[in-house]
Length: 339
Image (cartoon, rainbow, N blue to C red):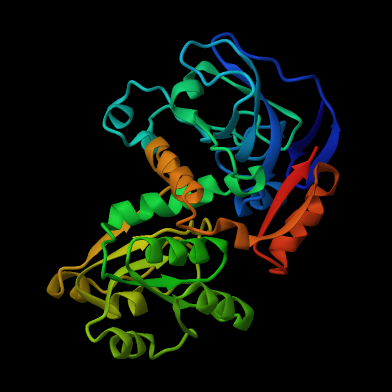
């Protein structure tokens, strides 16, 4: 089968490899779509702490089941979206629904071969939690954006976003725009801060209020809301945490959503704001299997129009073109649909 194999940072080749096989108790998927995540690009350029080599990248995958060796799995022929987590199911985190915190977690495309290939082997531990049937009428390329949306669903759950909340979103890349669309679906009001004019315009078309980055951010948010933001999503590593905290309403909840570069992950926090205004600061890492299922339901019900974020579709042979499309901010999401 054809696959994109990363042998070391900078060494990515699309070539013939041994066919993926259906594991005992698992399933085999013929991949129809796999979206590019910035973490794929990071692994290609620099490596990643969770990466092992050689590795077939890709963790935002959708395909058809062509072989199944597991009771309770969807039938052969089903189109499925694959939650990328591989978890034990028995540790305290798994038992309490926080399976993204599994103590023995693996991840497709990081330490298990992923979706930038014609076929993808799904092991037994992924069958019950990880295979989500895509409803008829939902295209594979759109369903491939389930996992990114699931990360947003998880973050909003951590922040208890509710109807009527004002949600401050720092950054209008694909994730920031998903946060904006998800906020609207929850009955909340998104306020997006973004330096790029084209992305501000898109956020405005989605229905968000938009602001440019400014030293007077807190004042501008106060002018818009009258009391500050109830929720803040830091969807870029460039977010100024102190400025965000000054823009929060009393008892506001701020989420460190975007990953931070190693060596640049220590940021100043205004402890006075945290204390006197009873703010909550939370992190959100990846998504749970439950938030993944919820995200697919949201996409299927068209509460979030994920398709508008797809700005490039290409073949596996041109995967690096997709990387450059995202790196150069030419577009938003690239999906590999031809294998």
